[in-house]
Image (cartoon, rainbow, N blue to C red; front, side, top):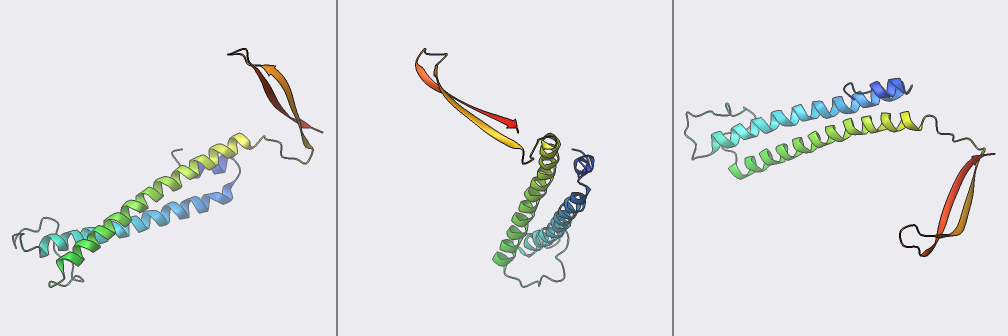
Length: 147
């Protein structure tokens, strides 16, 4: 679970490893991009706010691509948009990593499952007595057998 893609290598599905790393790498790169944009607009919102002292650059200087006369509400909306998108990308990273783990785990346990065309099913329905209440009931049994 610690190394992404290792379970796929162990399960002899190495073709999935580039997909895992491309997904995690792409989401990671996008999260860095969105975090930078969020920090830029956070600094701009703080610096352009008339209630903030002019010499206080708590979040750094306002980036040059954001004009000094920008609408404060638009800057705030863009800041919130980048923060929300960044948070969604973090959720996507966790989901992609979890899907990688689940894929390796399920395939490891299902590898020995017989899926040949020689399988058949024998259902049986018969009357029975319920164990808890001594009431009549039915039992359904399904046996998977090889031909």
